Image (cartoon, rainbow, N blue to C red):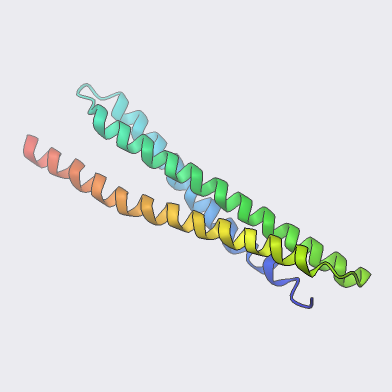
Amino acid sequence: MDNWIIPLTLLPGIGMMIMSTSHLSTAISQEISGLIHEESCDTHLVERKITQMSLLNRALVALYLGAASFAITGLIGGISAVQNLMVKDTFIVFLIIGIGCLLVATIFLITFSMRAVRIKKNQYLKSISKS
């Protein structure tokens, strides 16, 4: 059980992912607000952007759950190391939950990225065809 500190070392990286995802969410929210206030508001585009924002929110929830799981794993591991308790099963369960949450968040972020490029491409092509 000497590896109890490893999950805690992942927390700064998860924090960076949370910060960048939050920034993306804020940016897309501002973009949606701007699109809504345009005279010729493309409702289909706004709906797609809202779906994108929803993906980011799901990714954030998964990142928060992953961070919490890793923090709990480190806490359980640290306490068991000091008290010489054998809680290896609980340690592993929370570690797996944390890894699973990070995997889900990564899938959401990959999906967001792929859709974002497609949406921007369509948005630019519509702008060009209107000109």
